Image 1: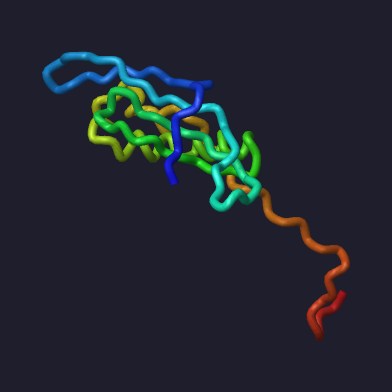
Image 2: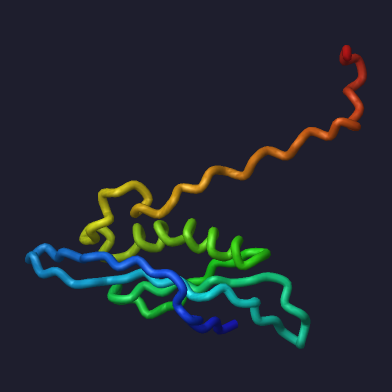
Amino acid sequence: MTYLMTDVILSRPMTRTRVDGVQTQVEIRFGKPTLTPTKNGEPPTDYYCPIQLDGFQDDRIYIAYGESTVDAVINAFTLAPILLGSSLIAKDLDFAELPNYWFPILPPAPPEPEDPHATQAEGAEG
């Protein structure tokens, strides 16, 4: 399935400093979350947030999915430092020394609450 870049809603400009000292501007862009295309006319059930690396010698559109637009953006923010860190110019970026390229480090999902109606195992006191 082909995904297109949507209207850019968020971006982070960065400076790339090459070994020879030449500096250029690069940018990571996040598109507006959009309903995921489906096959056979089925109704869409989730969203995608496109990500584009401008100036990274990479013209691909990367996709983060989510059950809602917020989930798609959160997942895009989680994917962003992975994309930056795996790029060929990662070490040349002004954000390279910052944790997670200065994108938020999201906490893990909270544990599921215990079911108060669950029965205790046989032989357990309670």
